[in-house]
Image (tube, rainbow, N blue to C red):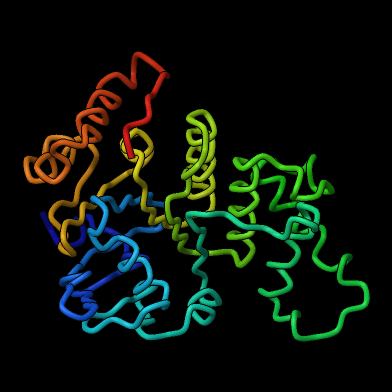
Length: 279
């Protein structure tokens, strides 16, 4: 085959090379390297203490790496502050969602837009009118337009998580980091949030890196799965490959979560019922 006909993949959106971070004598992240394509949903899983949150914080700039580097769209972002990384198009949601309870749903999204457009340090006597239409567009995208003028204090927790997703979209992210996005949610809510995330990621060409303890969520919604154990990447591949990886099974041996996830994947075509594995 001539060079003109050799297919080639687009450049990765996110690349991590040899990331390492130690806390005293504990090597939390040990030489982790991976890449993420635009529009891809990549799950980062592992037992407690595997280094997932540390890896997230190295990418997001909340921690400086001891070694390695992070590139976004081919540009080195290693060591930048979280706000600078956010301005480059990296959104983030957190395990415990939080909004301004006394503000309305649309006002919470407007606050994120005001920050994105660098308006928070200026005095705006009519801030409630600024970027309202843009905020409503984001709420329409996540299915909460009809609740725009309700106080966030009246929302169920699953809806708060959805508002957080709208807030994370305020800076038109190229990359979305989601730390246990379905934590604390009911099974039906979990599926709905991840289906929404997948649709938005594909429509907007957003790369999504997420951590998650619910193996049913991971195996049902991730395009690819990475597994960390004691700070090292031990597996990286599509769900079917990870499902049958002996090293991964050893890591999760005794928890039942991987075995349950295997049952979920195997029965997904014939049943919409999914069970939550033990945390």
